[in-house]
Image 1 (spheres, rainbow, N blue to C red):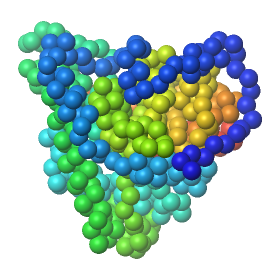
Image 2 (cartoon, helix red, strand yellow; image 1 turned 30 degrees about the vertical axis):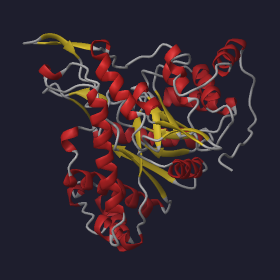
Image 3 (cartoon, one colour; image 1 turned 60 degrees about the vertical axis):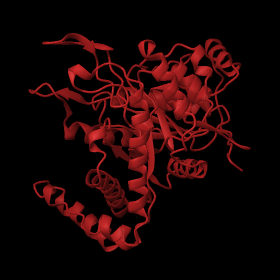
Image 4 (cartoon, one colour; image 1 turned 180 degrees about the vertical axis):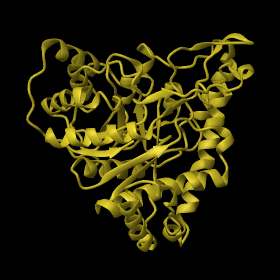
Length: 403
């Protein structure tokens, strides 16, 4: 069976919550039904209609990047993580760049994900689910669609490689970049798959794990022991790294959505896609699109998320209560976890909807360095993850992974 449905004890929703959930549920879903809703953070192409139409037509006909069976396999592994049987290790670039689509860079990224999984498994004894922000993470949500430049005045904000370029002279939204993103994703996935087919994949990936950079840390001895254990078991390391990205540009996602006989529609641009904290409006286009695809789907949960809103969101995105389908990725900031997470966990428990809890310790802890670049302090990242783990334990919940 493609889905496993479970029933949990739940508390009744308030009338307004029921009304919102019913409104969305009454809509007839299709890959393009999001177009009748308000959508945020999307590039539009009024000045390039012919090029845009040609790009969308081509994208609707190109081969899928992943296969439905792989998507189903990830959902099953995520369900196991939610039950505390596995642990998710998800990572990668904030936003990929076309220029980084090189053999050496991609091998290093894949190696890093696999090594993190091996270290986690060695230290905890728990199998890991490895998910990479690769082969499609080419978009960036922005707080404003425009910015001020000292020489060029008002220009469009940089929204990622599949929308526009970083140079001030290359900020026009170009539909051809959506197609470039597809081809770069193809090349990335081809490299990832090829590397994992090597007979010595485990030995070549984990065998040279080096933690010398951690020598100044008081925890170096413990991590060195875990690394030695992981290297000793390197040959037994199996392939299996899934891909995921924030599905921000919905016309692109729609074009790469395919019907699968007897199952429904799958977004075959990645194994998992997620909704950002800026685009999770209950009646918005992103929630509308996501509710109908069969992939595992994620939602970023930040400080502005109200408990009752989260309860409604769970009911809308996982009405059939499918294990492993809905991943809630919390990203509050280290100082806010203890105040906000307990109420969110309680709301989800009351909803009766099974979810996969994941902690993003990065995006809620952004600071601006003296050079004006955004960064994070490692201690803040670790603090958020540690505090989230503690809150889950105290709330009778399971933290299934990190992002």
